[in-house]
Amino acid sequence: MGTANRKGSAVPLLCTMGALLALLDPVQPTRAPDCGGILTPLGLSYLAEVSKPHAEVVLRQDLMAQRAPDLFLGSMEPSRNRITSVKVADLWLSVIPEAGLRLGIEVELRVAPLHTVPMPVRISIRADLHVDMGPDGNLQLLTSACRPTMQAQSTREAESKSSRSILDKVVDVDKLCLDVSKLLLFPNEQLMSLTALFPITPNCQLQYLPLAAPVFSKQGIALSLQTTFQVAGAVVPVPVSPVPFSMPELASTSTSHLILALSEHFYTSLYFTLERAGAFNMTIPSMLTTATLAQKITQVGSLYHEDLPITLSAALRSSPRVVLEEGRAALKLFLTVHIGAGSPDFQSFLSVSADVTAGLQLSVSDTRMMISTAVIDLFLLPLEPTLPCFTLQAALLEELFLAPVCQQVPAWMDDVLREGVHLPHLSHFTYTDVSVVVHKDYVLVPCKLKLRSTMA
Image (tube, rainbow, N blue to C red; front, side, top):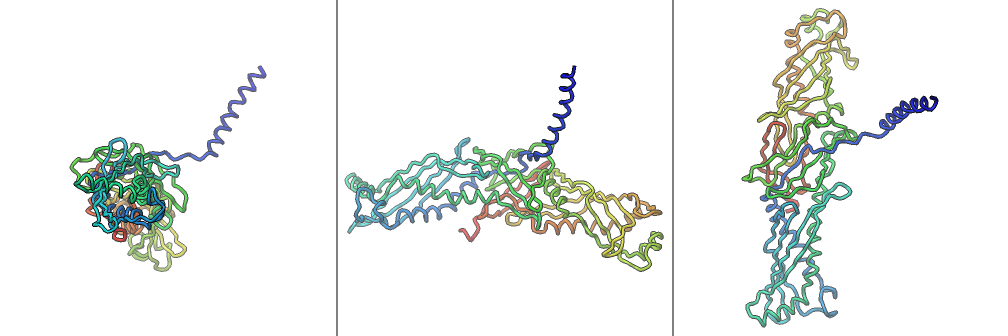
């Protein structure tokens, strides 16, 4: 009997210890995508096109480097043959569905044997590439196979054999695959820039984190991202989305290089973070003074013996919410507005509940989404007065305070986001020919890529 009692008393003790340990262990954020993008085949072709000059520089530096002994096979003496020019005639990238990419480079060389006319040489490089996620969470473009070939452009068999002999002494074909690895340094730097910490306001930041390696298909390269938000360097635990987000199906006829998709949850999390940072604690000026307000609300005259400007102090009473429907985006704010006078000793004599629905206008500048607001609906409801004897009708509330709230709340929010919100992007590219299309539950941003002029 005593043993049974001891066992029974241990159960609540274990439950209590478990609860305490659960409190000590911080809750890990749910890893779920809230945005992403698809690089289309046209976008891949553009990246190949702008990569040609960089590839030519890398190959020229290696192939035309000073003739150190290790550049010449079979001889420690300086070669009598030299490469006089290197040109990348073609560079292309294509998708290998469910695997990765294939890189093709066609290089034209001119090799000048001593006292003879330079002979044309073509080098063909084929490399298979794949993307892995490193332990630091960054994506890495890696080579999984490389096949270089070299051919002298000669029509006569004897000349061709002689040219081949010369080429074997001038070009180390096996080292060409090392050049391919060097070509991947720049794209890998760009992939790292994708996960940079971007500012929203002076004390708010966001960061886009890949959840897995991208998916390769005929449609393009799809990457799902999770956005983390920070306030003063600490990650904000945003509410979990009730609806999992996945990249929508895209039209096969798209002429865009890149199509970004941002979920409704992304926008709600953005405003949730701004609320946590206190960005929506607003001070709203009014054209009213205590004297003019006393003409409508006689009790005000007994509170103030001098004429003071009326001020409205607003704060969110619950978290904001973004609603996306076909063709329109709306922000719902739930405010408590305290009405009073006095500065710096503000004294509130009335509190009002203000439910605001604001239309969101979305556009893109460079790589930032610009968000502007305009009130489309506002409902004011008096709360319990801070001071007794205040009883107001809703119609009088709207007459006195509707206009300043309608005007100042959107202006305040626009000022908070005046710098825009950084979209997922690579640091050396900007977006052009952008359109923003609002759908139910998500926003699509089709655009074209443009290499920044400093990198061209």
